[in-house]
Image 1 (cartoon, rainbow, N blue to C red):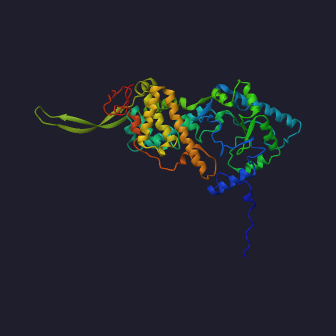
Image 2: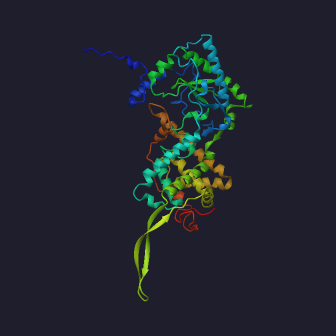
Image 3: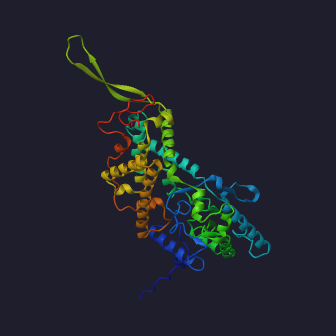
Length: 471
């Protein structure tokens, strides 16, 4: 019988990293999860898992709506030496300040070891992240990608003569990339490109990557002060991020954190606080979307003010001659910039509701199983809500089915065994069918059908072909 090779001890230590293959990553992440920071009694209330359990923490309300913190509810964190200006939600900043003082006292009384410990002083490195700045930078990159992959492709640039043509081309682009690169702010918030820090509920003490499990275990979990850090955090209303043990997360269900919350309002529940402190993103999506599309078009028209298209030129002979000679010439077209007021005049609420429906359909993954007929049915339903109720009700209807699609996709994702962190992008990719790229864009961009009166071509460059009728 051959001697078996000894099993390496490394197989039973935290070796997970982002560089491993899928199988190895899954096994080592599972080992880390079960051996080093298991979420079980008595510590289940002191830890939170963003990767597997709560990927949308701080980014969705209890109703499942994407949310982001109002900047009026921020408070500056205490940073030694004032080297950085960091913020968190006001009650979170208060709780953290008291936790910092608690650690200062513990160090003075020698209850914790201060030599080479990352928990000797609680100095924040990352606090609240402004979603609007990140979203702006993200959309700027999306626009650059649109220019490079669509507009500069053969013949595409010449087909954009005006704002209407630009919208149609941009919608085709979003149809193809929306699953992985959402365009709306709601889609961005729910994606893995938007950190949970936008909530103002998270304070990062290291600002490090959490991909290397071995370093996390050696430098943090096995640190002599870690247990004191975890227990103290819980006593002041915080949880510790299981996959980044240097990250504090406000526990809104904690009685202690609720005490800090009460200093800023008599909330009947944490849900009431969320309703007052946070914006519901979907209610602001369309105005934001409209502003960026106008900005993108004007930038495009400024950079490329002229284009050309073929046109027929008829020339007639002398009197009495029959017919006309036809000649094809190039016609130069000037792309005029537009204002929001001009867009509002030609593109009314129904157009933007249909456009928003189309974009959310692809962002949520619904396009994988929506037929053209189903899309038209949903469009009619949205417009009915708009006519019978109001604009926000119609937007809410779109958001509700998008949330339902996301729940389905989360269930599909968790039904499989996948290593690494769960993300909205991964969720969307878990669809079990191919995306139907049917000719739905014309139904969006064209605001009329045969028999409707078409608007005149405007001096601001709206297309006779693609422009919707005036409401």
